Length: 97
Image (cartoon, rainbow, N blue to C red):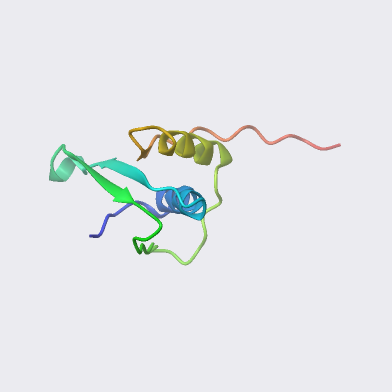
């Protein structure tokens, strides 16, 4: 099964999924279908024994947003499982004197 996500989203999902699998935790992953192809949703079971691969369209690594990772991991730790939530804004950079 192939699932398409933008590289930035995929980088964040990969980080969260890797964290869960390193802890040997299985979980559900749910995403909405592209509105152009319908309005449904899909759910799959992810477990450490199931092989996964992540394919990115760009060779550049995305800079990860810690707040988004935290929001995604919160969803992954619920009974409904990991869901893609909107990326929260990054906190403003602090100036150093």
